Image (cartoon, rainbow, N blue to C red):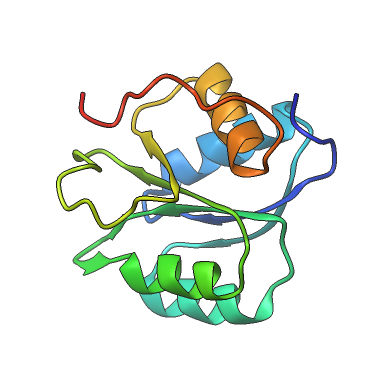
Length: 128
């Protein structure tokens, strides 16, 4: 179960995917604290917004979302890293919840629960 009212910062450069993710979060009872589609905007908002969890796409156009992941982690805020690529390839993201795209509402719910320390880790799908 996802804690109702959880504030989520969404970093996703694909407009349709961001809208779908916002909808999924609303269906889970979460609130979107902010959205960012570019590295610059994501870094700015990661530094100044208040949120309980971040969901960060690792690829933001031609840029990497690594700096956003680092900033959120520096603030000790739980995060979920998403990508359409093999997230385990670099091995750099151990300790963070990895959620490969595309994902279902149930997979998102499980990932959020785990990232917030409220549930068991979902089945490993990072290499598919």
